Length: 333
Image (cartoon, rainbow, N blue to C red; front, side, top):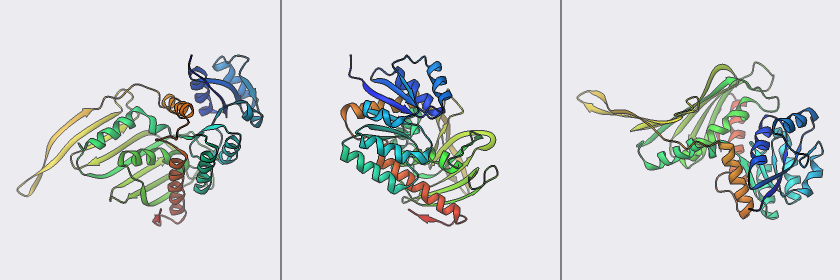
């Protein structure tokens, strides 16, 4: 039998439930406890996954830290810094829900603390582990799209509406992470505008422009009060477009090939065809848990979603927030 990492899940909400399910059934993990201030949530998660009496249910998360090797944190973002810092100080490895914290300097502080404690800090940027995104990166790297020109993404739905974050902080990080991964670079300048209808001070819709050093630009449409559910991202090149559409569950990734040939004073479309890209069938969060446990088992820093990556994404979100607050003024990162 392989060595199992003892782990506690902090937070029994929607995402905490998914983490409980994954670690409870993972052969390399031993779920010792679930913590949440809401006792009804704890009872519900125990019943839903048939947790045995050996799994402690508690509201006292601090008492768990000396008992486990690792924690998975799925609590409101404003609580992340305090919980992660306490866990690392108790020499626990940490898997943290995105965003790592709400401040870039605190993200870096936690990353440095993890290094000092010789513990692993992995951020659950789930899309970086999505088989379609991983395969998409291979497609981009192959050069088949030609010269990369621009990108766009839409992430809209009617909820869920959060009270701790606005639509920007809840949704944008996914598409930014995908574009950064596919392009192999990060934005140097951003612009944003937004509107609030449901809760004062929390934007329901945000439009974002990302500008990269290479000249590539991407636009994002983010909204949690739009019943037209979209989960679609596209990267456009001179020879074709790579499209990741989560709503097409059977064929989420495809390439739409096509370019122009000049004939006299006209531009004529040529090589127009579609290619469905085959993608491994696997749950992205399961891949996250596999990766985290591998990093813990080998005590090695994540090459995909470390605390440094988390800090980088939070710095981008901060710049976008500043641009939005300044009515779309471009902000350099």
